[in-house]
Structure formats: structure tokens, C-alpha cells
Image 1 (spheres, rainbow, N blue to C red):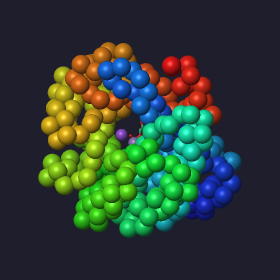
Image 2: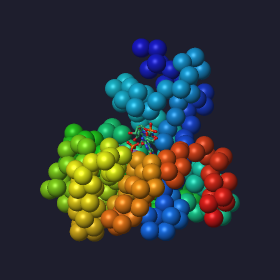
Image 3: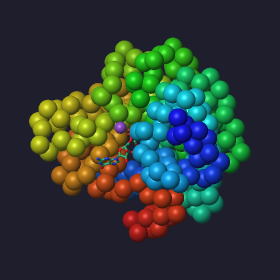
Image 4: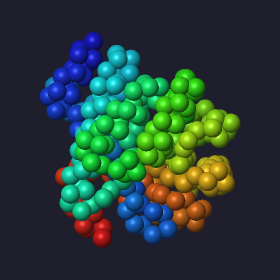
Amino acid sequence: LKLVRDLQQAVTDHQLFMVYQPQTAAPTGCLTGFEALMRWQHPELGFIPPDEFISLAEQSGHMTLLSQWMIETVCRQLAEWNTQGHRLRVAINLSARDVVDPTLADRLEQVLLAHDVAADQLTLEVTESAIIQDPVMAVTVLERLRRAGVRIAIDDYGTGYSSLSQLRTLPVRELKIDKSFVLGLEEREEDRIIVRSTIELGHNLGLEVVAEGVETEAARQLLANLGCNYLQGYLISRPLPAQAVPGWIADGA
Ligand code: G
Ligand code: G
Ligand code: MN
Ligand code: NA
């Protein structure tokens, strides 16, 4: 497949880039960090969404290359912001391949060290469907990452194989409620019940809870009232190019 060959080229030819979506504290609206999301601007095909090329990269064995590029790009960016006086927190997404890679923790620590970025500036988002493929290996890898000092979040919570016995054994700090529940918050009583229960479950387990897909003021208010810790969504901001981040922070302050 041409697109698979192009993936390798994409890394070396700088066709990939990261965008950063703000996350805020629900009670205060203050900025707490960003989620880093990968983008591919293909020279002929134009913009290709990550849903398409991430799974392609996983199937073709290019995922480690992409993840390594992503980790380096985000850490280099964090280092630059650090020197500008913005000590930010960024969440990155791990693929199913990354979660069972026994070399990930060492590689990550090397990159953090090389750029003089503190481990607590990074959150790693993992999905339960990624973990379920090889839970024993995944727990080993996540445990090493936790010991390295990075924060671990369960992404898309509630959409996959939400196993409570597994949740109990994972070294996680944070639950991220999937946007499919948050988007329906105003219209559907069921979604409100699910969101409320997830926040309660998270808090009772000592975890912080993030809601993504916050698009309306009503949803923001509801989530804040339910005690959700952090908010992310178009209401606050779309994902931003890296160059726009310092300006966005200045405007918000
Ligand atoms: O904006 P959005 O379309 O970025 O992202 C769509 C999906 O792609 C999400 O599920 C997100 O987790 C995933 N994704 C975005 N960036 C990355 C990345 O850098 N690595 C991995 N593994 N997944 C990503
Ligand atoms: O990693 P994850 O699956 O959580 O990816 C987050 C996805 O959600 C990305 O595709 C991102 O662009 C998207 N997103 C972020 N905020 C909103 C929002 O408010 N509404 C919608 N519909 N999508 C959002
Ligand atoms: Mn995510
Ligand atoms: Na999600």
C-alpha cells in the first residue's frame, strides 16, 4: 500500500506535526495542561485523520517509529516552553503497540533526560481496549512508566472493556470520560447517570477525572457541579498548533 510507504517518508519529511488542546480545572477554569494530538499533512492526499493512519501504522509495524517521533517532538516542545517560563503538562496518547513495548519506559526516560523535562510534566493516555490485548505485559510496562514518574490516564473510559478488577490493578491516576457520554449530557438522562457514576467511581478509587468533548456552557456547568476535576473540549479550545500556545495562555490569563 502506498500510504504505508508514505508513513516512513512522513516522519523524515516533516509531514507530521502535533497540535495541543487545552485542559482546564473544572472549578476555576484555569489552564492545567494540554493533550497532544498527531496530525498528518500528506503532500498529495492532504490532511489524513489520525484514526486512519494510527491503525495503519499499527498494522504495518510503523507505530514504534511514529510514537518515538511523537515523544521526542512533545518533549522538545515542553523544553522550549519551559525556557519561556511556561512549565506545562502535556498528555500523549499511547497506541496498543506502545502499551506492550518493554523498551518504552527506557526510551521515554532517555528523551526526558535529553531535553531536561520532568517526568511529572507528562501524562500517558492508554485505552482499556489496548490493555486488554495483553494485560499482563501492559501492567508490567505501565508499572515501569509509573515508577519513572509519569502520570497514567485511562482514555475513552466507558467505551471499551471497562473491567473494574483490571482498573483496580492498574497504576493509574486519572480517568478520562469518553466524549460520547459528555456530548449527550444535556439531552440524555442516561449519559448524565453514566458521567455522574464514573466521576464518583473515579473519586472513590482516589483518581482524578477528566471530561473530554465539552462543547457547551451547560455541559461545563454540569460537569463542574458533579465534581469533575478537568475539562477538555471545543468550548475551551480546539487543538492548537504549537506556535499558538503561548499566545493562547497570554490571552486566557
Ligand atoms: O483529533 P483526534 O482526531 O486527534 O484524534 C483521533 C484519535 O487519534 C484519538 O483516538 C486519539 O487518541 C488518536 N491519536 C491522536 N494523536 C495520537 C498519537 O499521537 N498517538 C496515538 N497512538 N494516537 C493518537
Ligand atoms: O484520544 P482521544 O480518543 O480521546 O481523542 C480525542 C479526540 O476528541 C480528538 O479527535 C479530538 O480532536 C476530539 N475532540 C476534542 N474536543 C472535542 C469536542 O469538544 N468535541 C468533539 N466532538 N471532539 C472533540
Ligand atoms: Mn486521548
Ligand atoms: Na476519547
